[in-house]
Structures are given as structure tokens and as C-alpha cells.
Amino acid sequence: MDPFSMVAAEEEQDHAGADLAEGVGSLDDGTFRDFIVALLLAQGGLFAASLGLMLWHFRGQGLLGGGLLAAGAVALVVTAVIVVRYERA
Image 1: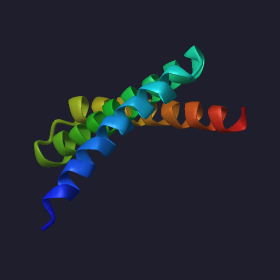
Image 2: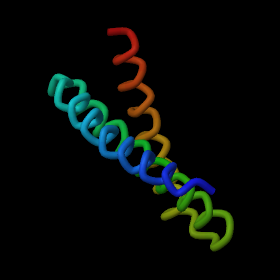
Image 3: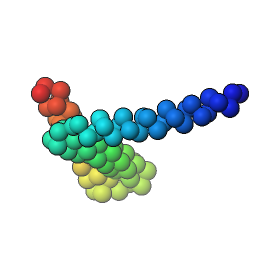
């Protein structure tokens, strides 16, 4: 193992953070907002859909599980709509 390779990797990480900050700063507000909304909807949708499915199947809580499953599915569909709208623009 070369100890100097770790020093080079740390220097690259410092530049990567600056490049990321510069790239995010150059986005317009609408694109950045759509990205954050799509990110949160996808994470929440996957969580709600999987939790709802597990509640429904394993615990027999059809009403709560079905509601979470439906809410998660709606969130994932909205995420897909945002992504498709962005790709067409």
C-alpha cells in the first residue's frame, strides 16, 4: 500500500466538493426544486409502498397497509411525471 496515494485521494476529494458546489450553484431554481421534490417523493414513495405492503401481508392490516401502499404508489407516479417532464424540456 502506498501511503502517498491516500494523500492524493484526499486532495481529489477537496476538489470534488468544490466542483459539486459550483455545479449545484449553476442550476436554475426550477431544476433544483424539481430535483429535490423528485428525490423526496421517490424516497417517501418507496418507504410508504414497502411498509404498506408489509403491513398488509404480514400483519393483516389491510386498511392502513393499503392506504400506505396507495400513497406510495401515487408518490412514485408523481416522481415519474416530474422526471418525464424534465426529460422532454
